[in-house]
Amino acid sequence: MNQLEILRESLGQCDEIILDALIMRNRIVEDIMAYKEANGLQILQPEQEAKQKEWLEKRMEGRRHKDEVSDVFECIRTNSKRIQARKLFNYNIVLIGFMGAGKSTISDFLKNVFAMDVVEMDQIIAQRQGMTISDIFETYGEQYFRDLETNLLIEMQSRSNVVISCGGGTPMRECNVVEMKKNGRVVLLTAKPETILDRVKNNHDRPLIENNKTVPFIADLMEKRRAKYEAAADIIIETDGKNELEICEELVHRLRTMDEEK
Ligand SMILES: Nc1ncnc2c1ncn2[C@@H]1O[C@H](COP(=O)(O)OP(=O)(O)O)[C@@H](O)[C@H]1O
Ligand SMILES: O=C(O)C1=C[C@@H](OP(=O)(O)O)[C@@H](O)[C@H](O)C1
Ligand SMILES: [Mg+2]
Image 1 (cartoon, rainbow, N blue to C red):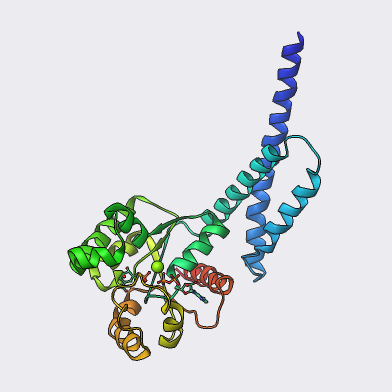
Image 2: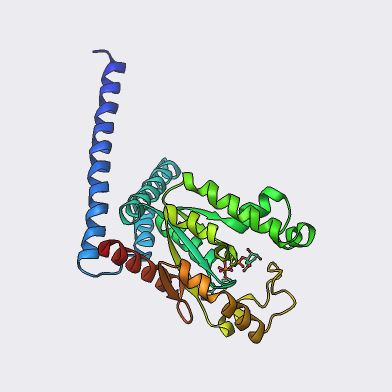
């Protein structure tokens, strides 16, 4: 063997070690998830990620290729999250609820903890139309916007294991709910009108309440929508006084319990 062949063989041995370690690591990730579930422990423990990053920072201090190694570990972490998400949910998670209930916020949190893709319906519609939601309402009217929502939901049938953050009015059309349920579980987030007002009062992207930011108006519209929201929901989560972690933890437990009962 010449020198090059020897080096290549050594490299191949490194790859074998990495491969075995990755296979073992992925199995451990699944085992940890199973252990947490079997023992009723908290599924989401974001502080673990901070600990792992701290460990890597220390281990790589003053070493060459720190950025490259960090990049690989970032990728490993992301894929571990995906493995957990796929083990927990083999369907889309569809978030519905009144404006300000926290659909976008909770989607974002799920994206961070499970590396799940998020389909933020309002954002995609606004991007594709090249205008804000308020401008779409003003220029083309509400029905036009509602048709865009329906078409986007139909498009989502080809996706799996994604979080779909709906607009507040999306479940008002029955055909939309049919689409949501084809390959998704529907999670209704609720909050009291006072909480909603507090959350949306400084925002100007919601044309339906822009000139009516009062508790009675919000309570009235919420009441008009309640029956359809509740009919669409597989599970309902009250969000008043809860933070994102608490809401997501409840979401995971409730969905898993529902799956076990099926
Ligand atoms: N559980 C919560 N606790 C406190 N504030 C929240 C919570 N959920 C959302 N918010 C805040 O309320 C506002 C509206 O939330 P958002 O996620 O945009 O609602 P939606 O998408 O349902 O309209 C945001 O400013 C967000 O930070
Ligand atoms: O409730 C509604 O009918 C709407 C809610 C909005 O989304 P958020 O619930 O994310 O604010 C947005 O889709 C549009 O302004 C209409
Ligand atoms: Mg939103």
